[in-house]
Length: 453
Image (cartoon, rainbow, N blue to C red; front, top):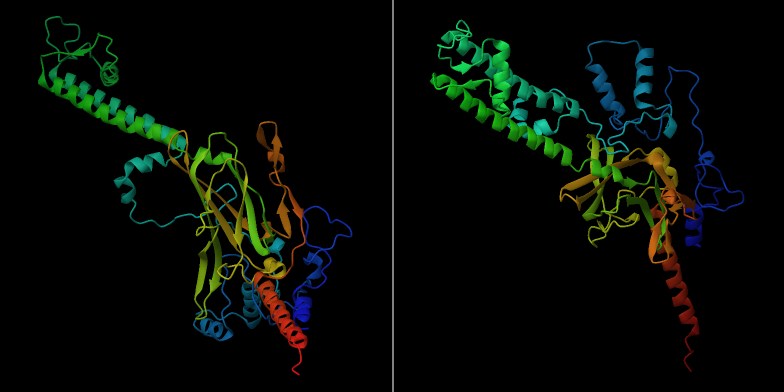
C-alpha cells in the first residue's frame, strides 16, 4: 500500500540512535546512527573542486551560497588577478564545495550566547560616546567592580584635593601663612599654615569630622562661601555614589546563578506529537514571582532573491497562546516546544539535524521575591547539544509530608523509541494512513450492504 511504502521510506529499520556514553546492545531504535551517514571523501587534487548539491555554512557569518554567475561577476570586478590554481583553491576553501556535509566536530562554532548567559557580541566604532555621559548613573552602575571602586574613590579624593588647594591659595593670598603663630593676626582659617593642613581641613569639613583645631572664622567671606560650596558638592557626591553602590549591590544579576537549565535539549514524542524539550529549575527556596520563559532561534539564511541574513531571530512557541509559558517555578519543570507547521523545525529530521547549524536562546524572566526587582537568566543550545530520541528522567519523589527534588538527576536522560523522520513526514504518513483507513471502511461498508431483491 501507499502508506506502507511511505512508512518504509520515512522510517527504515535503523540500527541505533547516537549516544552520549554507550549503546544498549540489542535495543531497537528508529533513529539513525552516526555511522549510517556516508563520510565525505576529500579530493586528492586540491586544485579541483567537485560540485555539490547543497552547501552548509561553517559558522553563522559564513559566505552565503552565491550562484556561480554572481561569483564570476564578483571576481571580474576585483583589481588583483590571482592565478587560476589559487583562485580555484580559494573558492573551494570559502564555499567548502568539496565537503557537502560538514561534520559537527569540525565546524567553527561561535556561540551567540554562552551557556552562562553572556552575549558574545562586541560593539565597536561607536562614534557618539557622549550619549553615555548623558546617562551617567547607568554608565557608572554598569561598570565592573574594580572600575566602579576606582571612580568611587576618585570622586572623593579629587574634591578633597581641589578644595584643599583652594583653601591653601586663599590662606597664601591673604598672608595667613606668613603670619603663622601670630596671635594678633586674624586668619581666615585657623591653624592652616600649609597645603597639608589645608587638605586636612578639606577632608574634615566635607566628612563632617570636626576635630576642632581647624575652623573657618568670620574674618573673611570667601572662606564661608567655600565651606558652603564644599558642603553642597559633598552631599551631591554622597547621594550619587551611595545610590550607585546600593543599586549595584542589590542588582538581581547574581540571582540568575541559582536558576539552572539542563545542558541538553531532547527531542521525543509527547501526546503523539514530536516535541523539543529542556528542563529549568530554581535552587533557592524563595521563589520567582510571575516567571515567564521565551525561546529564540538564531540561524542564518539566504532568501530567494540572494540576500544573506546573518543571525536571523525566530520565535519558538513555548505555550504563549495557552499560558504555559508562565511558570510556577517551585520544582524543576520540563519546557516543551511542539514541532508543528508554525515551528522552524517542521522539516527537521534526525539526519538533517547533524547538517544544520543554529542556536536556541532561552530567556527566563521573573521578579525576585525578596527585592521586587526583575531578574533574567539566559542560556543557549546548539545543534550538537540536542539529543534525538531521549527524555528527561523524573527527579521528584514523594516523601512523608512533602515532595523531594533530587537535583542529582536533573541532567539525566534515557532513550525512547522516536522516529527519525521529521514532523512534516510523520504528518504526511498519518494522513496517508487515514486515507487508506477511510477507503477500506467505504469498501467494506459497500460489501456489507444487503442486496436488493
